[in-house]
Every structure is written in C-alpha cells, then in structure tokens.
Image (cartoon, rainbow, N blue to C red; front, side, top):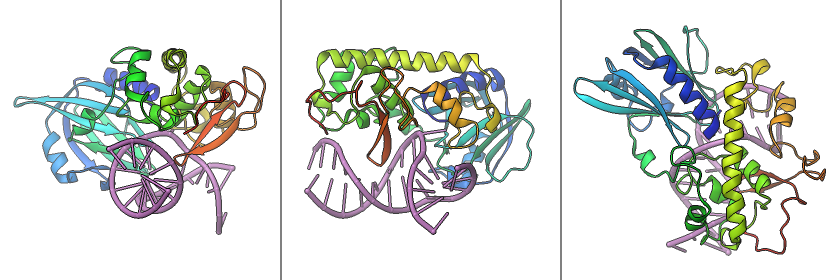
Length: 287
DNA sequence: CGTCATGTTAAGGA
DNA sequence: TTCCTTAACATGAC
C-alpha cells in the first residue's frame, strides 16, 4: 500500500474516521514492528491520549495525540504490506497492533512486518520536500538536490531525504511520463529534463490521487476489490495494474505511447521498468 | 524448489 | 566521500 498517493488517501480516510477517538487500551501482537522503543513503553505512553488528527509526511502516517500534559505524535509506517484500518477485531495471523478506543478499534496488520510504529519522530526530520505538502517540486529544487549527484535518477527520485514519498512504482511511472531513462546520472540531466520531471511528478501524483479518491477502496487488502492499493502479484492485480500503470510491472507489454515493448532492468536491487524508445538515452551519461 | 514483491537500513567494496 | 551491490528483515504468491 505504501507510496505517497496510497498513504495520502489512507491518511484522509483515517482522519475522518478516528479524529477525536481516545485510546483506552492497546495490544502488540508482533513486537518487531514497534521500534525503537519497547511495546510496553509505547503502550504506556499512549493510553488515555486522544487522536486529534491524522496526517502524512512522505510515506509516514502521523497520528497527532493530545492529553492534558500536551501533545505527541505517533508514527506509523506501512512498509510493504502494512494495512491500517478501523473495524471489529477478528483474529488474524498478521495482526501486528491493535488500539481499542472509545469509539471503535484501529487495527494494524502487516504480513512481512517491515512496517513500523513509533513515538520517535526523528525519521521525519530527515525527509526532503514533500510534493503534496510543500507544493509541486520545481525544476530548480530538483536540480538543486539531485543535479550534482552521479547516482541514477531513479535512485535519486526514491531517496526520501531529497524528495519524500516516491517509491518504486511511481518513480518508474514518473520517469516514463517525463521521457527520462532511469539509468541516467543525476548530473547528466538538462534543464528541460528537470522541467519535464517536475511536471511529471505533479501529474502522476495528481492522477493517482484522483483515481484513489474516486474508486472503490479496500483497506484490508481483499484481492477482488483492489482497484487502487497495490496488493502485489495476486489474482486481480495483473489486469488492474495493466490499466493503471504506464510501465510498472508491464515488462514485454507494449508502451502506451509508442507500442515498443517495455523493458525491465535492475537498479539497486529493484526492478525498473521503462520504454526504450520513449525514454531513450540520447547519448547521455549512464550511472 | 526458486524468484519476486509497494520499504528501509546496514555492510562491504570500487 | 559517494554510490554501487548485496543482504537482511518475514511472509506470501506464483
């Protein structure tokens, strides 16, 4: 579920649902997701606190809590497979944490436990500009934080300290829209390419958010209704992502722009999908 | 059995 | 110093 558009949609939804709820009790079933403090410590520090707002920073969900003593933020990161939703608790092997509140329960499930729940907010200080919170990242900003690096533009877009919120899917989609090859070095991009990237970031994220706001959503991850949240390689996904994505997970399928077969390469251990025709190298430097 | 998966972080090496 | 790769983390789908 975890890139900026998905977390943003979830954040808006949860804000409507749990704003004003007071945490009466909490349970940790998979302690690994509580980091770095202990489960006991974290639970002790949130009991009787009220959730006054749910926000998002990069891929982090921020639950703002208040009590008579003051305020604190509870951070939830969904990792790859984290799901955060309200409802009645039903035993499920992936349940990682459960908050019982005065008006309902909040459930965090995470199959791979790569997600995280924490009261330590220092992770937020390391984030770069957020494309939604801080507005469309201008070409000048992108050039400033990425333009002197010899790393690949794909890695740079996914570096949360330069720009917060993009992951593997949207980095691929943005590069395709901008016509920039994922293996290009940051310091090889020309001014018009930073402009195209700026525009592509805005358009790609706006489109995803619009899609997420207007279609049926399945917060728990049922395969038959996964029209927005990405639920990995299973059942309904193939046809769904075939429609939603331009290049991601579309190796050998025809590019929607030109019909050329989409290719896959591996960068920093992650799959990059691109169209060799639309995202041509034009003799530029590769990372 | 092997490969891959929306993320982050650490280690070792060029 | 920078940035690469690999691995680790746990589990599931194919």
